[in-house]
Image 1 (cartoon, one colour):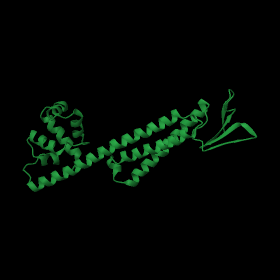
Image 2: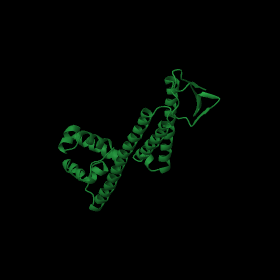
Image 3: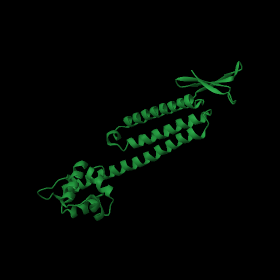
Image 4: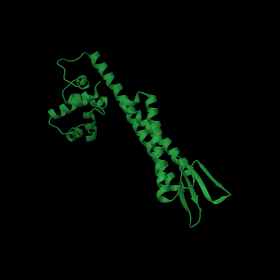
Length: 230
């Protein structure tokens, strides 16, 4: 079943009637956006509505499913076969749309965790970096779900995992870069430091080892405090 072809056929039928998308949407009690998505092939009307559309245009439902007019009426068995095919495609569309919605919700939750971690916790607290990583992982799970609703990716689990891993790497690199800017411009210590050390020989210096660079916090907690990047 070719959804693009069906959509183009529905568009042709509407124009033959001299109707706008809004007028057709009003007739079938749906939104303008629904009609637009039918005609682009990104979504299809449910089977019950498809039967109504076929009757409205004085066509057999199998002609709508084939995306073209037929010179003769199809056999009942062939029509039922096409209806079954359409029903299966409808289920797949519903599944992809559900996956997309879940994916967007999970992505939004991951972004919320990241933003909260970067704003609530002070820069010298390791919890900001930890929760940012957790938020990135949650967002990547959402991206994995979203990729399941994309036809070119949905068929390959390994490809979806690869997309999610790449997104985690990109997000973490972005967070590390933002953290570096905070150190460079905002005179703050790095959130993503993986080692924090100080010695009795230099009690007024705290050394932070962050990815790709080192920061020395001089005179912490005093009016003369400043950070040095090495």
